[in-house]
Every structure is written in C-alpha cells, then in structure tokens.
Image (cartoon, rainbow, N blue to C red):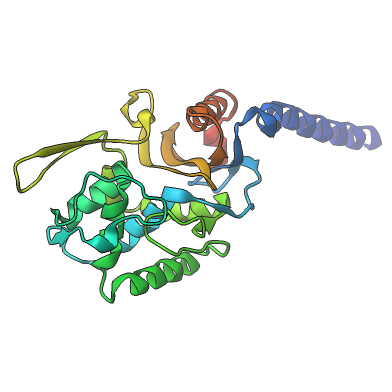
Length: 280
C-alpha cells in the first residue's frame, strides 16, 4: 500500500510538471512586444496569458469602448441627428478630423466612426450630446467602471486623447465582456469600411484601424485600437477560438505591427497548445 501511495504521488507531481512544461512557451513574456498583456477565456474565466496585467497605464482610444457602452445603454435614439461643434475640436493634441464643424450625422453614424475608425470628434460629440452634457457623461463613465468592478480605471474624456484615461489589462477584460453583449457595438467595431454622405453630397470613406478584421482567418466579435505617445500602441479584442470567446488586451506595444504580431502569437499558441474544451 505504501508503494502504491508513493507511486500515485509521483505520478501527480510528474503530471503537474508536464503541464507546466506545456505552458512554458506562453510563460515567456519576453516573446511579446507589448508591455502589458492579458488573455482570458470568457466562458471559463481561465487566464491564458498574463504579463503585467495589473499595471495601470494610459489606454488611449480604448476609452471609446466605454463611450460606446454608455451610448448603447442610454436608450437615446440612434437616428437622432447630432452636430459637430467647436467644442469637439481636439485642442490637446491637435489631431486631425475630416468632420468639419457644422457636420451633422446621426448618433448611430457618430458611434460607428468612433468605434471603427477612432474618430475623435465623433466620440466627443457623443459625450457632449449626453443628458447633462460632458461632465455628466464622464461621471457616468466612471460610475459604469465601478459597477463593472474596474477598480483601477479612471476616465476624464470620451475620446482617450488625455493620458489621464487609465486602466489595467484585467479591468479592460471586464469592459470587453460588457460590450460583447451589445450587437451594435460588435457590428461597428468589426466593420471594415463605412461611407458617410454629407449634406453637400460629398462622400467620406472610413476604414477600420485594425487590419485583422479584414482577415478571413479571424473571427472577431469586438475590436478597438488606440494610440497616444504615453500609451503606446494598444489593441483589445474578443475573438472566437474553438467556439469560445477569448478576450485579448495588448497595451504599450512598440513598433507599427507589434500589437498585431502579439495577437497572432497568442492565437497560435491557444490553437496549438490549449485544449479549450477542457476548460469547460
């Protein structure tokens, strides 16, 4: 009996070591170009990758997902016309926009451009046209963050242009889980192109800032990119892998295609080395 007991313990230890060895490639955080990475299976809450996931960092235009969540849950009419005003001009970073002052678009179109093409004036207009104005909107953003359990997150504007919009990868997965419940946000974030016709008859063509949404090898539910100097290149997604929703967060990535490369590396690892069915 003693020998059997020793043998069972040996097998248990050996099995644990084998499991650790199987996960060794993903544990090597230096293979990732992003400073902070967090990947989680939303069905089981199992963590698939973790690198500095509790670091509080600027999140740039990832902020717009919270903007979209408030708009989607507000019940405000999506077909209501909103106007771009002088207040929507970016005077912090002087970023460019093709939406001139006086441009009128529906709330739905503003939301579409803010999510798909990260249009800052559109995002700002959405906040400005919220009941109570911009102060009420930013307050609601932070109230919603607390309600979602995003304890290390703070918002100061609906665009993400300020470096004071901060969060952690773990908090952002909670946001991804929430926005993934809204078909309108799903649809707009993964739209690859959208044409806007102005009153003058002029057409503006907008493209998605994440080139992976055009790749048929990916099944993406939610996508949002972001960049300001303080945040670096950022990317968050919810993508389907093995018929399960997997959330991916990449913050402060350096190099034009580094965040895309990190996403590809993570997906390849999950597909090749993880049996997600075992996580049920």
